[in-house]
Image (cartoon, rainbow, N blue to C red; front, side, top):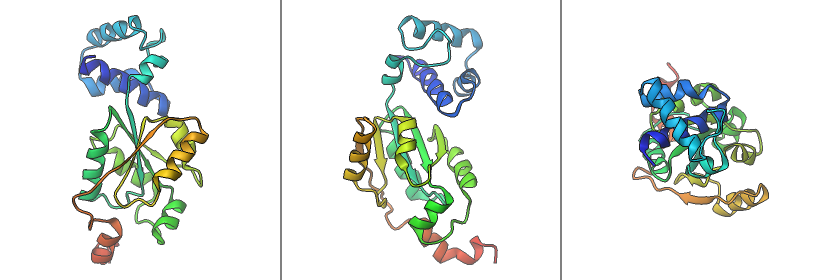
Amino acid sequence: MEQSEKMILSSMYVSQIIGSESMELIKEKSMLPDDIINSKIDGLIKNQLVNEDRKTLTEIGRSSLHIVLAGGVFDIIHPGHIHTLNAAKALGDVLVVVVATDSTAVKMKKRSPIHDQEQRQELVNSLSIVDICLIGQEDDIFKTVNLVRPQIIALGYDQAHQEKFITDGCKRIKLDAKVARLQSPIPESSSSKIEKEYGDSIHGI
């Protein structure tokens, strides 16, 4: 499959997740003229990867994409995050990142986040390696997992979730996903450490 065709399928997948118009995203990502895009979509329909509506994926089209799901608080984006997300993206075609809700962030970090959940979503969405960033669900991460239906769930080096917890939860929603534990070359990088060292300037004091 050509890279441009994979990009069209990826854009359609992302658009389905967030409920947006896929053609606009395809144009933005590909920079191709409309006639070339439409010609490629015609080919994808012929190969039964895209439905006749020209904007949603068939089961074959969906299964041809390797979706990677990663999650975290992402309160202060630091080099450890970038390395981890690059490693996650390298595992598949589409990287979906879930940021924790504010209340979940408090439970995880034992402090209020500097940025609220919408700001953290915007920060992560601004990273070129991320295809789409979503805000998580309260108390049940598998609601979002079920929405995304990834083939791979990537866990960062410092994430508390254990592989068995993830695999058991996936079984409950009948999802066969692999769990990948990612390593960071900068394990001392963390939002909490950065805030502790530079807290006064971060908070504008």
